[in-house]
Image 1 (cartoon, one colour):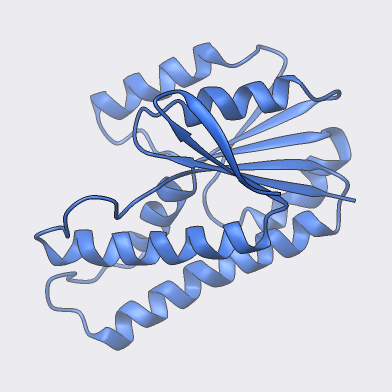
Image 2 (cartoon, one colour; image 1 turned 135 degrees about the vertical axis):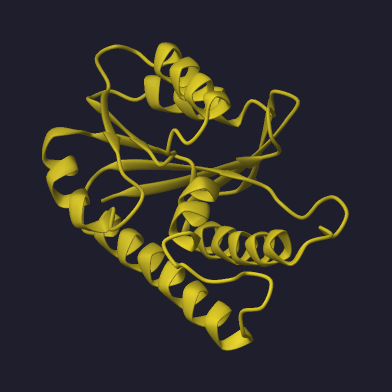
Length: 186
């Protein structure tokens, strides 16, 4: 039976390092699902550092869309899967839609969120059909001020609701603050 773990925290909180440790401590082969896209020099540098921090024997899959279609194959050759990170996945899926975020309708936003939530539902359904230990890494958003621009508010709201869904369906949830993990569910 699968086990789903969610690890959340702020930027640079240590959540990725903690998640990697959880995976290293498990027996078996590890797959790493990287959801980022190298769109600028800063992101390329972050990706490079993340690659260097992972064990060389981990298999990396660079995907953010329709991940659920790959889970069956990934689970055939891996016992542990680390997906880093959900908030980049949400970002990338949002920008699959070519709309004006400043003037789009509530209906358009709802349709985009439904699409993203559907991607998550299908992913978790596929994970539950396997015997893998699956770790989601995500950023905890919304603990600061309300963003000034509309796109940031839309993103924060969608990512927050996606995080709530994953947390509700996870077996364990950890919050990492300043490098210290705290188990908050499970």
